[in-house]
Amino acid sequence: MADGAGRWGRRTVLRRAALLAGGAALGAAATSQTTWIADRRLPLAGGPASATVGNGHQQVGAGSVEVAWGVRTSERLVALTFDDGPRPQWTPMVLDTLEQHAVPATFFLVGERARQHAVLVRGRLGRHEVGNHSWAHHDLARMDAHTAYDDLRRSHDAIAEATGTAPRLLRPPWGHLGGAVLHAAARLDYRLVLWTLQMVEGEYPHDPVGHARRIVADVQPGTILLGHDVGTEQRLVALRGLPDMIIGLRDRGYTFVTVSQLLRHAVVV
Image (tube, rainbow, N blue to C red):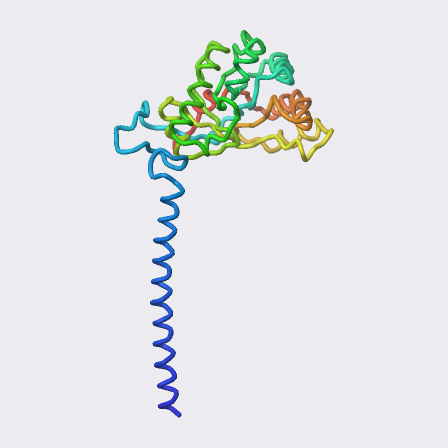
């Protein structure tokens, strides 16, 4: 019985060793195959995922790019941002509200729309800041490095012409980042800005006051708050509640600043 058990034990050990060796070989083959597939589908340089454009010198301005979702600070500061405009739809209403309450904001403009509707923003952005939100709100993360740069350069020029100010910030549509976006942002000496908190209009249909109360409760010091001055009708919940939002945040001791002003108050840790 003991000898049989010993032989069974040895066979089990050998079988396990063979399975482990086979698994390791299979794993290595799978890794090799995955790498091969990735190489074929994602170019090593210049493609959407790559932050380089080959073996030559990388023409990337200052040579670095920062990404901000918000800042760490003990000061009660909040940066209000609006994406996708300008358009006659709601941009004037937002500007009127901000003017009434003396609130600065940062507008991430779509270049094509800035060119088409320059009259909406010309002369009205004195206390505000502008950023680049692409030429036509296409997904930059699907573009190669040269296409992403050309898109942003075209938008950059249109925004500068429409507003009189060259943007220094970039927010890619939907917050989609890829290596090519980073490379293009570095070439243009942009800072990449995403967001800490965004409007949740769908949760408060036809209830601007309730929506404003929710946002006021969720804001923390250093928050970058995302809104839109273009879009579907449900977004009006946030825009109609904007006065209540401003008053509520000020009642909590918050000061409104542009994104660039907020970034200057970041605590280095």
